[in-house]
Length: 175
Image: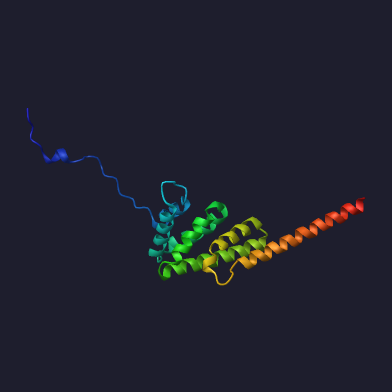
């Protein structure tokens, strides 16, 4: 027996799920957290995509603030990602004037955080932030952070030499 088709046969009676669009700041956050972790994706494409999204939506305050905070957080908490985070900032700097504003703000915040870490004596954080600033060397005038790093290294060598001399003197006095 043949039954005629009706429009009701094509109707899906299940309620449709609402489409939820993730906030832009969350999407960029996920992308930045996962950068260089998926071997199938090219890192260059990920870097460009994140930088473009941040620059294209520069007026979104939540996105900017989330991006700035996450950059600083990643540098300290996942140091192996420093070159990739720096690449995002460098690529953003090449995109329109908004990209330059992003790069300037990242530099400003990183410098402030570095000074605060030095003041507190948090040398691991200082080292990582300086490494990040070194990765952004192209954005800085002149020799940038290299002179600071050279001064720190010279001071460390001097302190090490003094300590070795003190130890040698103590050992001679014992004998």
